[in-house]
Image: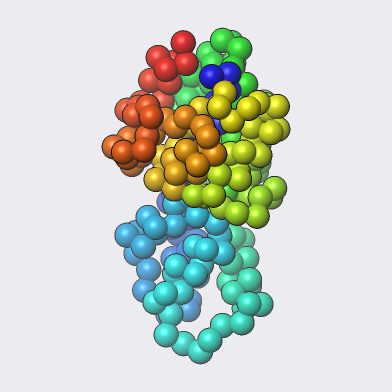
Length: 211
Protein backbone atom coordinates (compact mmCIF):
# COMPACT_ATOMS: atom_id res chain seq x y z
CA UNK A 1 0.00 0.00 0.00
CA UNK A 2 1.22 3.44 -0.94
CA UNK A 3 -1.59 5.70 0.27
CA UNK A 4 -4.02 6.13 3.15
CA UNK A 5 -7.48 7.61 2.72
CA UNK A 6 -9.19 8.79 5.89
CA UNK A 7 -12.81 9.35 6.67
CA UNK A 8 -13.07 12.67 8.51
CA UNK A 9 -15.85 12.60 11.09
CA UNK A 10 -15.22 9.98 13.74
CA UNK A 11 -11.67 9.29 12.58
CA UNK A 12 -9.73 12.57 12.34
CA UNK A 13 -12.18 14.83 14.16
CA UNK A 14 -15.40 14.27 16.09
CA UNK A 15 -18.29 16.45 14.98
CA UNK A 16 -21.14 14.07 15.84
CA UNK A 17 -22.28 16.38 18.62
CA UNK A 18 -22.59 19.26 16.15
CA UNK A 19 -24.52 17.15 13.62
CA UNK A 20 -26.83 15.96 16.36
CA UNK A 21 -27.50 19.44 17.70
CA UNK A 22 -28.22 20.85 14.23
CA UNK A 23 -30.52 18.00 13.18
CA UNK A 24 -32.22 18.07 16.60
CA UNK A 25 -32.97 21.78 16.21
CA UNK A 26 -34.52 21.22 12.78
CA UNK A 27 -36.50 18.16 13.92
CA UNK A 28 -37.86 19.93 17.00
CA UNK A 29 -39.07 22.83 14.88
CA UNK A 30 -40.87 20.34 12.60
CA UNK A 31 -42.35 18.44 15.55
CA UNK A 32 -40.43 15.27 14.63
CA UNK A 33 -39.10 12.91 17.28
CA UNK A 34 -35.32 12.64 17.05
CA UNK A 35 -32.82 11.07 19.44
CA UNK A 36 -29.20 9.89 19.49
CA UNK A 37 -30.16 6.39 18.34
CA UNK A 38 -31.69 7.81 15.17
CA UNK A 39 -28.69 10.11 14.83
CA UNK A 40 -26.38 7.06 14.77
CA UNK A 41 -28.11 5.93 11.57
CA UNK A 42 -26.93 9.13 9.88
CA UNK A 43 -23.21 8.44 10.24
CA UNK A 44 -21.47 8.35 6.86
CA UNK A 45 -24.72 9.21 5.09
CA UNK A 46 -25.29 12.23 2.84
CA UNK A 47 -27.26 15.24 4.05
CA UNK A 48 -30.34 14.57 1.93
CA UNK A 49 -30.38 10.86 2.81
CA UNK A 50 -30.04 11.82 6.48
CA UNK A 51 -33.04 14.11 6.12
CA UNK A 52 -35.11 11.28 4.64
CA UNK A 53 -34.25 9.07 7.63
CA UNK A 54 -35.41 11.79 10.02
CA UNK A 55 -38.59 12.34 8.00
CA UNK A 56 -39.55 8.70 8.53
CA UNK A 57 -41.25 9.94 11.72
CA UNK A 58 -42.79 13.01 10.10
CA UNK A 59 -46.60 12.97 10.20
CA UNK A 60 -47.48 16.27 8.55
CA UNK A 61 -48.43 17.18 5.00
CA UNK A 62 -46.25 15.90 2.16
CA UNK A 63 -43.10 17.97 1.68
CA UNK A 64 -42.01 19.20 -1.72
CA UNK A 65 -38.47 18.71 -2.97
CA UNK A 66 -37.95 22.46 -2.51
CA UNK A 67 -39.07 22.31 1.12
CA UNK A 68 -36.78 19.36 1.80
CA UNK A 69 -33.88 21.29 0.29
CA UNK A 70 -34.73 24.21 2.60
CA UNK A 71 -34.72 21.94 5.65
CA UNK A 72 -31.38 20.42 4.67
CA UNK A 73 -29.89 23.89 4.21
CA UNK A 74 -31.37 25.01 7.54
CA UNK A 75 -29.58 22.13 9.22
CA UNK A 76 -26.32 22.87 7.40
CA UNK A 77 -26.43 26.55 8.37
CA UNK A 78 -26.83 25.62 12.03
CA UNK A 79 -24.10 22.99 11.70
CA UNK A 80 -21.62 25.41 10.11
CA UNK A 81 -22.22 27.91 12.90
CA UNK A 82 -21.28 25.21 15.40
CA UNK A 83 -18.23 24.24 13.32
CA UNK A 84 -16.94 27.79 13.65
CA UNK A 85 -16.21 27.01 17.29
CA UNK A 86 -13.69 24.31 16.30
CA UNK A 87 -10.00 24.95 16.89
CA UNK A 88 -6.73 23.02 16.40
CA UNK A 89 -7.29 21.67 19.92
CA UNK A 90 -10.11 19.53 18.49
CA UNK A 91 -7.48 17.28 16.88
CA UNK A 92 -5.50 15.08 19.25
CA UNK A 93 -1.72 15.11 19.41
CA UNK A 94 -1.87 11.40 18.54
CA UNK A 95 -3.61 12.11 15.23
CA UNK A 96 -1.17 14.87 14.27
CA UNK A 97 1.84 12.74 15.20
CA UNK A 98 0.63 9.75 13.18
CA UNK A 99 -0.17 11.86 10.12
CA UNK A 100 3.27 13.45 10.25
CA UNK A 101 4.96 10.05 10.59
CA UNK A 102 3.01 8.56 7.68
CA UNK A 103 4.04 11.47 5.48
CA UNK A 104 7.62 11.06 6.65
CA UNK A 105 7.47 7.39 5.57
CA UNK A 106 6.45 8.50 2.10
CA UNK A 107 2.75 7.65 2.09
CA UNK A 108 0.29 9.80 0.19
CA UNK A 109 -2.62 10.93 2.38
CA UNK A 110 -6.16 11.93 1.48
CA UNK A 111 -9.55 12.61 3.01
CA UNK A 112 -12.58 10.67 1.77
CA UNK A 113 -15.68 12.18 3.35
CA UNK A 114 -19.32 12.51 2.28
CA UNK A 115 -19.43 15.88 4.05
CA UNK A 116 -19.54 19.05 1.97
CA UNK A 117 -17.92 20.82 4.92
CA UNK A 118 -14.73 18.73 4.96
CA UNK A 119 -12.42 21.48 3.66
CA UNK A 120 -13.93 24.01 6.06
CA UNK A 121 -13.34 21.66 9.01
CA UNK A 122 -9.74 20.99 7.96
CA UNK A 123 -9.12 24.73 7.84
CA UNK A 124 -10.60 25.30 11.29
CA UNK A 125 -8.43 22.59 12.89
CA UNK A 126 -5.38 23.52 10.79
CA UNK A 127 -4.93 20.15 9.08
CA UNK A 128 -5.23 21.19 5.43
CA UNK A 129 -1.49 20.88 4.78
CA UNK A 130 -1.37 17.31 6.09
CA UNK A 131 -3.28 15.92 3.11
CA UNK A 132 -2.37 15.60 -0.55
CA UNK A 133 -6.00 15.47 -1.66
CA UNK A 134 -9.54 15.91 -0.39
CA UNK A 135 -12.48 14.02 -1.86
CA UNK A 136 -15.75 15.11 -0.28
CA UNK A 137 -19.42 15.78 -0.82
CA UNK A 138 -18.66 18.53 -3.32
CA UNK A 139 -17.23 16.15 -5.92
CA UNK A 140 -19.44 13.07 -5.65
CA UNK A 141 -23.01 12.16 -6.56
CA UNK A 142 -23.24 8.94 -4.52
CA UNK A 143 -22.55 8.71 -0.79
CA UNK A 144 -21.23 5.70 1.12
CA UNK A 145 -21.62 2.70 0.92
CA UNK A 146 -21.03 3.59 -2.74
CA UNK A 147 -17.23 3.68 -3.22
CA UNK A 148 -17.24 6.88 -5.30
CA UNK A 149 -15.75 9.17 -2.65
CA UNK A 150 -12.80 6.81 -2.09
CA UNK A 151 -12.28 6.09 -5.78
CA UNK A 152 -12.15 9.84 -6.41
CA UNK A 153 -9.60 10.21 -3.61
CA UNK A 154 -7.42 7.51 -5.19
CA UNK A 155 -7.80 9.27 -8.54
CA UNK A 156 -6.76 12.60 -7.03
CA UNK A 157 -3.71 10.88 -5.50
CA UNK A 158 -2.97 9.19 -8.85
CA UNK A 159 -3.04 5.82 -7.09
CA UNK A 160 -4.59 2.49 -8.00
CA UNK A 161 -7.37 1.58 -5.50
CA UNK A 162 -5.46 -1.60 -4.61
CA UNK A 163 -2.60 0.61 -3.37
CA UNK A 164 -4.86 2.42 -0.88
CA UNK A 165 -5.86 1.74 2.72
CA UNK A 166 -9.08 3.34 3.91
CA UNK A 167 -9.50 4.24 7.60
CA UNK A 168 -13.15 4.27 8.67
CA UNK A 169 -15.32 4.16 11.77
CA UNK A 170 -18.64 3.34 10.07
CA UNK A 171 -19.91 0.12 8.51
CA UNK A 172 -21.03 2.04 5.40
CA UNK A 173 -17.49 3.36 4.99
CA UNK A 174 -15.95 -0.09 5.27
CA UNK A 175 -18.46 -1.38 2.71
CA UNK A 176 -17.52 1.49 0.38
CA UNK A 177 -13.80 0.77 0.70
CA UNK A 178 -14.20 -2.94 0.05
CA UNK A 179 -16.49 -2.49 -2.95
CA UNK A 180 -13.92 -0.04 -4.34
CA UNK A 181 -11.19 -2.67 -4.20
CA UNK A 182 -9.35 -1.18 -1.22
CA UNK A 183 -8.18 -2.54 2.10
CA UNK A 184 -9.97 -1.16 5.15
CA UNK A 185 -8.85 -0.36 8.69
CA UNK A 186 -11.74 -0.11 11.13
CA UNK A 187 -11.70 2.03 14.26
CA UNK A 188 -14.51 2.77 16.71
CA UNK A 189 -17.72 1.01 15.70
CA UNK A 190 -15.99 -0.50 12.64
CA UNK A 191 -13.37 -2.24 14.80
CA UNK A 192 -15.54 -5.32 15.16
CA UNK A 193 -17.10 -5.26 11.68
CA UNK A 194 -16.55 -8.57 9.88
CA UNK A 195 -15.52 -6.87 6.63
CA UNK A 196 -12.74 -4.87 8.31
CA UNK A 197 -9.28 -6.02 7.20
CA UNK A 198 -7.35 -4.31 9.99
CA UNK A 199 -9.18 -3.69 13.29
CA UNK A 200 -7.40 -0.88 15.15
CA UNK A 201 -8.13 0.24 18.69
CA UNK A 202 -6.15 3.47 18.51
CA UNK A 203 -5.16 5.81 15.70
CA UNK A 204 -1.51 5.07 16.42
CA UNK A 205 -2.06 1.41 15.50
CA UNK A 206 -1.90 2.56 11.88
CA UNK A 207 1.86 2.87 12.23
CA UNK A 208 2.08 -0.88 12.78
CA UNK A 209 0.02 -1.59 9.67
CA UNK A 210 1.84 0.91 7.44
CA UNK A 211 5.39 -0.19 8.13
